[in-house]
Length: 296
Length: 331
Image (tube, each protein chain N blue to C red):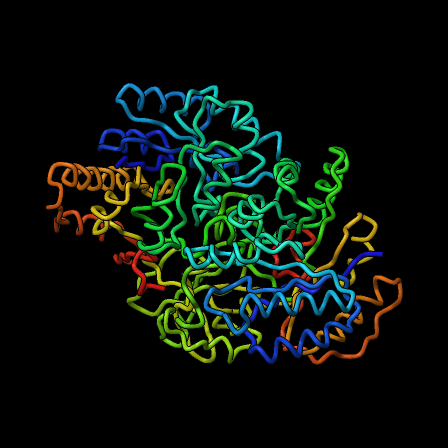
């Protein structure tokens, strides 16, 4: 059966909110949980030791835990945090940048790659496999045709590297050194007053015709529509995808996971309306179309 | 410091060479490079002419093959690497790990430069590319502050090239999928950002509107000058305010930073703009070449001449320039 994973929390939530979220997640039917700050170096509600403790707790609850790393590495302090994560050897590390691969290799830590690592062909996977890659995520802008070719190529090269597909949530699309939330409040990034805490699912950016385009989330930009590949789960399973990743939201996560769990078991999902943050659906990338498109 | 100039066409290449470029970079006429524009770039015959022209005048030539091949494009991209090697370029600019590996094994004698699209923002990432593909040089993304560039430069295992002038990418290059989210093409997949095929201009009663695949990017009132609808430079609404929520249409200009960049040991400064005209390239190359000459002739005494500033302002988006992320406050 396909695995379900809970991606790293891409938003900035208070420490208590994070603990509450994962205490519930411990009971949800997800196999893998990614923990850690993957977006902004200034988000330090949880210290590395808090994350490690959470990781041990969730493992004790039967979850496979992977420690995520920051996507855009800019400073020596960023590298110190990265090394801290790679200096433990209890948990797999999710490398979201070549910096993380390099540090993981030096510490001889096995790693997987997140969706922001640019893996577009089998040759790239072969390079990383030599370094200790244990699994990989499809970049969000790639669709099922490319994935199919990648899986066939992998199998032809004799590599066994489970693939993960970002399957539900707002798509992480870009990272900048500029903080767009701070910019919205006319605050300097270095003195941002942690305004992201007030926006647990980001700031909606719309066109002047009220079309939901993006979600501003600190230094990262996410899709304005919610990616949803629930209907494609049977296809993914047939293709041999190992894991479907669901990206945390503050509200409605339990119901979303319950539905994905039913679908992967071959059951029809409940049709109850969910209490999610209002956003249009999209699945265009999967079909090789503009990401924002919804193929019916 | 080496002045590296863009060449989107043979006339632009000659303009760069004639006006003081130490090196020029070009791409083939397809999506193997990050400036895929209709009517732009080189076929093999033109490339051979350009390389001969440049080499006869002691100017080096780099070939950019800096998009990310998917399995069905793999043969085309590796063929591009072979073509560049056959043409006798002085370096190949690459981003994809698989392609870097291919080039390192197949053509080990041709220097490899890591493209800005390779998103290396730390010396650990640079070490990854050095250890695995023996890159000689890397182009740093335009997201680092000068302090951060200093930190990277101090421990870098390879030569560094930084962006000096031209369009400003505000996102970490190589990891921005905004364009494929609104259209079906991105820099990584097709070498295109906000592709022209998806652009529509419409004069409406509310003003001139620019659209990208139907999405309203900007609307201009009377007297406002309109710019190309690069999606991150549009005006959008956030919590009721309409503004340039991501970035203003401005150009990067780092003339003021030249002495510091030199002190940091930066090997080369890069001019963006393979989509620009030969006249533009000539003006920019001449200005930067003069500035770099002055920098070498008068160590410790470098000042930016007004004439240079005026020339570059006139060539900038909206007539405005910025130090971008090099200046911490910009963030």
